Length: 181
Image (tube, rainbow, N blue to C red; front, side, top):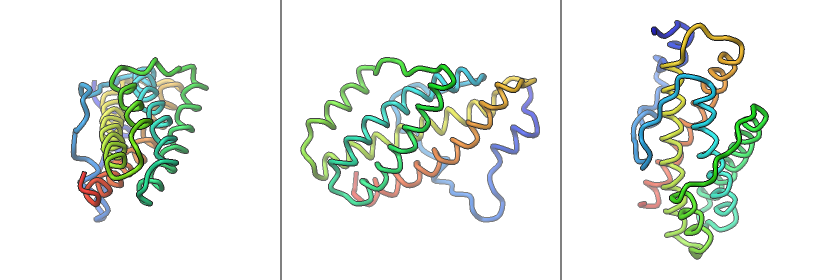
C-alpha cells in the first residue's frame, strides 16, 4: 500500500531550518522495533509505555535531586496521565507491567535520591520516548488505506503525539548529556 499525501505530510521534516536531527536518531531501548498499521495496534503499543511513564515520573517528581529532571518528570507525568486517560476512553487498557518495567519501578522506589537515581530515570525515559517515537512513525508511515473516521482519529493522535515524543527525546538526550549518564 502506498502512503497517502496526508500521511506523507505528517512525516516530512521541516525545510525552514527548524528540523532537529537529534529528535530522529537513537534506538536505545531493549524492545523490538515497533510496528503498527492500525489505530488499535498503535494504541496497544502506546499504553504500556505511557502507564510505565506515569509511575516512574510520579517517583521522579518527588525524588530527583536535579531541577531539570524534576521539571521533565513533571511535564512527563502530566502528558502520560493524559495519554492513558485518552486511551482508556478508547477502550484500550494498560497491560500488566512486564518484568523489566517492574524491575525499573522497584529500582526507582528503592534507590536513594541522587545522581544515580537521576541517571536511571532519565535514561529509561529516553529509551521509552525513542520507542514511542518509532511506534508513531511506523503507524503514520504504514497505516492502511482507506481510512475510516476511527483510523483518521488514530492518525491524528499519532501525529500530535509524535511531536511530543520527539521533543522528549531531545530534552532527555540533553539531560543525559548534561549529567553524564
